View (cartoon, helix red, strand yellow):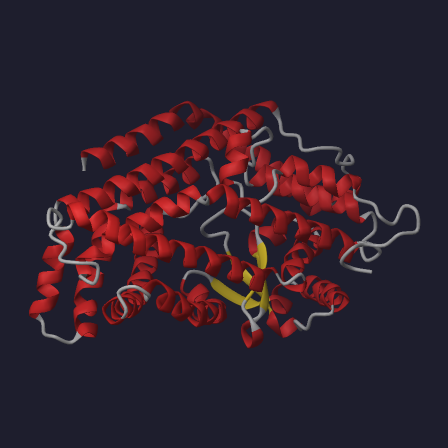
Length: 442
């Protein structure tokens, strides 16, 4: 608890000098939204990512806080798991579960919620600090009761899924002590695909309100359908949705989600308020690039390859760690329920160590999606490169993107290229200048 309070105080203290700047930031965001509502045609052409001096400083400061926050969150997670191991919390939960009977699923039904709820509750300080930062910078307007309701729903969903996965994991561990990591990995593949399918239909509506886009903005829905037809994909207006984000955030977003019958386009109401129709079409064109360029299956394949490595490392780590410390931690063997915090520790460390590789791959496919968005809107939208640059400028301003991010931060934690790079690419990419054509959209 002392560590939790210390981290909370550190993060909030770092924000103290910025409290007086929140009002000016809000004025700048309102100005951007007002300019967008009047149309960008009358605005000066975008030549690069620029912010007013005060907002520039705040965005850069936010970037620094988020950078160090990644390390704080990682260290906190590792310390938390070590405390759980040394205090023998998991063995106590295991004993309670085993007293309920010999049925392994019933045991998982008792052990898993106890462990995961404990970890979730102990992790609240970091989660709350992140939300507090977003509120202080004006990125989030979600009240604390609403935030806690969403946190509770997320924890519940995580726990329900974990009950089944943990049961499956330890069934593999008991049946094949030397190959469990491979068999469990095979089982995660259809589960991952299933979750991608059900998320937009069952999970997302638990957190936000969705309505048909055509009922909210018919011209935008028509423009998006015209763009989608050019990509060769089939997402009719009936699968385009408006999402109410403005009751929780000021940030902008639009995305394409789901697979097969659940595939759909979603545009946040904040995006519609801040961007005009051509700008929104470009943003959604970027998202369509992820589908047309098969980034979804590539991402799933990359994620599963990473999981295979992590599960193998977990297999090795269990043997290595339990040999000298298993008895001290109250863990009988690798197939003991109480060994789960060890596997979570390996997953946490492996995930953090792999961030530079994973995020480099993410930045690559996001750059490809930017290129696709430029190509699919070329000839469809007048001055499409300038429209794309305007979109990035507004996104960067409202989301407080750091104009001069730390290169280490970019390499380790950026999932998208920095906004300044994206604007530069939008303004300079022109394969049509000498009679050529795009790479992805001919």
